[in-house]
Each structure stands twice: as structure tokens, then as C-alpha cells.
Length: 76
Image (cartoon, rainbow, N blue to C red):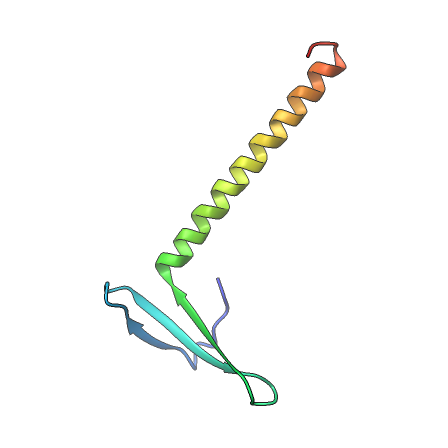
């Protein structure tokens, strides 16, 4: 999750009823502004995507280790 300055956060509702937390962050020279947003729904989606990616990566590692072990004992 992005770290938002809680003293500067504004909350608003989307048309679908989801709460969005917004924070406006100015660059050091004051010439540019960055709008930082956070929604619980997006956070949950990102966590699910990360979990799925980690599971696929770990499954791939298991496949590599199993194939390596079988080659080591002469089975392919």
C-alpha cells in the first residue's frame, strides 16, 4: 500500500459507493503535483495478483527442482 500523509488525506465516494482516499503531493520546486489515490478494492486486487504470482513462481521452482532431481538419478 502506498503511504499517504494522513493529515492531508481527503476521502470521497465513487459512483459505485467505494471509498477513495486522495492525497495531493507537490514536487519540491512546487511546479508539479502528483495525485495519490488508494482504494480498498484496488489494494485487495493487488494482493490477490501478488499471491497468484507467488504461487505460480513457487510451482515453477518445484518443477525445476523435480526435473533436476530426476536428471540427477538418470530419469527424464
